[in-house]
Image (cartoon, one colour):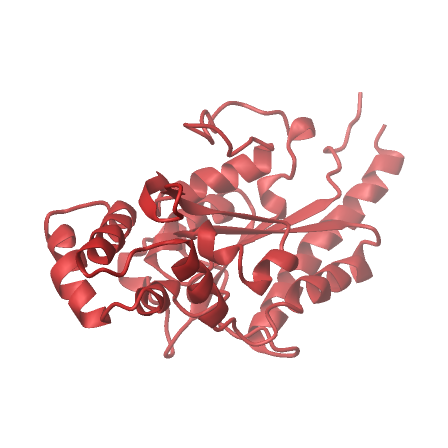
Length: 284
């Protein structure tokens, strides 16, 4: 019997999108549709919030309804236009390879995996440069008719579900299917996990990310929060078990605080992997 813990040669980093990797996509999309932002909030979104709609469903319904009533439909063209206009944060497209290199300095050959887990629309994110430097993009999505107009929300990745998607990522469960990822609480042995939670890092900017913070921190992983205007946007909603390991500004410029934070985080995990490799040699 193997005496030491099983070796997993993979580190997984997951990021929110809006205000973590890029500016908020929502108002960019509203403008790309040709709508007035104030009118959209006041007459379409806010009434749904007051009626206690789930925020992800409210956003989709308000966009579709406003587009139809104002003659500016939400369609694939508007989503692609929004994707082209969204500003990604500094050097974010260079970040994955820099982090992989940092991890491999400590544990040569280690796999470093990058995922977007966002309540924002995959239909936008996959048309940004993020698609070319991340391994996968998980998020909400829309259903379109034959003309390319959005008619309903297809998948709603709500804020609390981010933790469920993190667990699915750890256990290697598919997110494809009408109720996927389902049964994420199903037991999976350490040997069979795609990546153990203590080798996971999650980065997010606000209250929508707190459950994901709690999942990774409770299981030995690392949560990093985006600092904006000197603080964290989700601080008022946070409880003690949701505290991240660090706060850092949303700039991925080489030598900046966020890159330092990610480098320390990934190298700390890589060090455990290197130690585990030694254990595999002497632990049988």
